[in-house]
Amino acid sequence: MLKVEQLSVNYGAVRALDGVDFTLEPGQVLAVLGRNGSGRSTLARALMGLVPGQGRVQWRGRDLLGLPPHTIARCGVGYVPETRDVFALLTVEQNLQLGLADRHRIEWAYATFSQLKLRQHTLAGLLSGGEQQMLSLARSLMAQPDLLIVDEPTEGLAPRWVETVGQVLREQTSRGAAIVLMEQKLDLAPALADRLMVLGRGQVVFAGTLAALQGDPALQQTWLGLD
Ligand SMILES: Nc1ncnc2c1ncn2[C@@H]1O[C@H](COP(=O)(O)OP(=O)(O)O)[C@@H](O)[C@H]1O
Ligand SMILES: [Mg+2]
Image 1 (cartoon, rainbow, N blue to C red):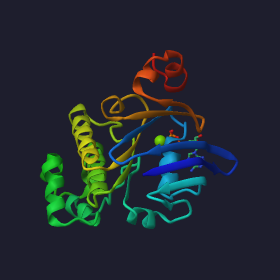
Image 2 (cartoon, rainbow, N blue to C red):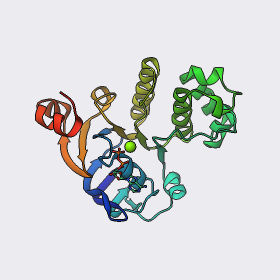
Image 3 (tube, rainbow, N blue to C red):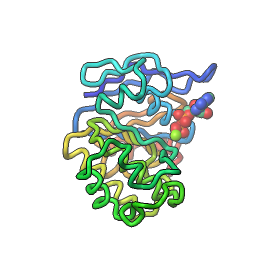
């Protein structure tokens, strides 16, 4: 289980994350929503050890703050950054192999993301943006993480791939993985999230259920820009 207490991040004089608290159980999805600049990616990076944070991040009883990203990854934490994180000069298959996969896992990726199978020997740098995004997700799943942090996984993705991403994330929860899902708007969150959190200027401005969020149009308009 993941326990985050008073997590804060500063970039120089800018306080990008300010006293964030939440917990997450195995098999659960927490959606982290907010406008651009609200601190969602900073939260993702802090959980993964890519930016220094203050406060506490405890995963399965171990303190993660201060550990380097590769150690955090070895604790079973997977991360899909908002920038499509693929090795442009390696083929699709080589990218998947770098995700520590055995043949069985690579075949799983091809069965799940049919587009990647068609492109298996293509250099990742030549893929479309959507294909790169799926490759980045597929690679993060090669090691079957127990905690998955996904930063805007459907941003700019064609609707048919959005559905695939939703199915894949649901599959991860049914094998017991916990997911922190960053989104700008209510995209995959309504179908997937057990709980939602809205960030505004780095602070938690809402935490609760979808019904509670939908019952508060003023909050949605102020912090999500939804009418
Ligand atoms: N590397 C950085 N250096 C300085 N400020 C940053 C950096 N990355 C993000 N910020 C600032 O931190 C705040 C939160 O950004 P971010 O976490 O990327 O938000 P989101 O992912 O919700 O769009 C914004 O004000 C942004 O300008
Ligand atoms: Mg972001």
